[in-house]
Image 1 (tube, rainbow, N blue to C red):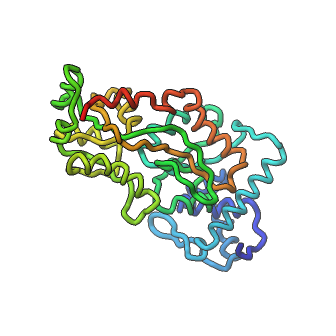
Image 2: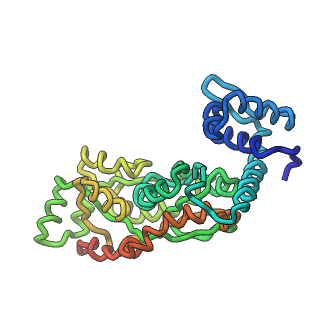
Image 3: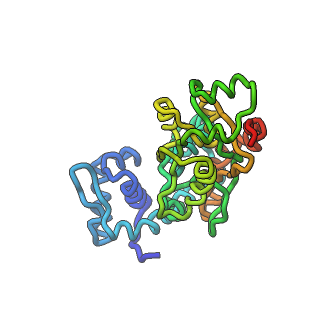
Length: 330
């Protein structure tokens, strides 16, 4: 750890908040103090650390190299301060907690696996909020530094120094809008669709992994097993939630997670699940957190709410509709 001067809780809190908001007014609001008070504290930090720390720009602030160098240690100090303050009561109370939880996930992950726990979280902790952030290649570094409290990873794998919890099982299916020719065949149910019929249409796929990110690459490869085996993929999009809109203007067949397709249908989207091939890969989305936050009461509480819904709904966790979705014959 870098050698730091004696810094009080307020100074450390303002430093970390500025890293997140890059705006002095927003930091003042988040910390419940005036802008002038936040400015005075920043001046003291600059003097104590002998660095500008944050450069001012027309639309906000930008951390210096020294500020980035101190980020890990300052977040560690903030967590230590918060842990010490909570230990005075010995009992974690969501009603007394005041913080913004930061969770990394792709849009489909929030929509399918995490959004269901939000109402209870906000009800039990009225002074807390959840900031869902994009899952980018350095998400493990952000979990380690405290920039993220929790992440949703698309598939189960071992990550050294991290803890994981499988929250459900899912697979990829073919889906179309209700006015697609194959949808009418599926709904009429006169005969099972054959894979060769599905392969006559080009596919619409989602690319969630930049080529440079080997940690997410296996997830894209699982999807490619379906798309590239069946037919050339005509359109790629980085956003799962765009799939229904893109389908509405083409005769493409979308390849998407089964849970996502079911959620679209529950929300009234006129989507029809054609089925899945017998060897469609099964993947297990997992909650991921750094081992340092394993016993932090607030984060234990947060994780439990995202997981409880699936403990209460074993059908979602085990996906019994896999066989029902496999509706064609090769």
